[in-house]
Length: 130
Image (cartoon, rainbow, N blue to C red):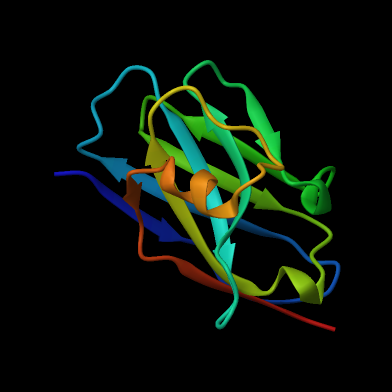
């Protein structure tokens, strides 16, 4: 059974930083794609970025230079370091796992990109105040 558990969310002022973690268990594939998504209530869940088993990363345009995805393969943990946070980054953040290779953002279909991931965590809330 695959489990993904996010942690590290919270409230921060604009310009601040947060580091999200995603603990992964039961996912035994040596080649994989791990992603971060976010969703505001009433809006589509959108891809934030991804990292694959080779360590290659990809990000949506609006977070490039501010967010960094990394992984600790020994401890099966995925990270999302978020700096220079803006109020528009407020959302519930989810980690997800899927097969290698990762699709690259921007992808023509948000739905197809989301469907490329098979397993999801429950999410952690990030709130950025101005």
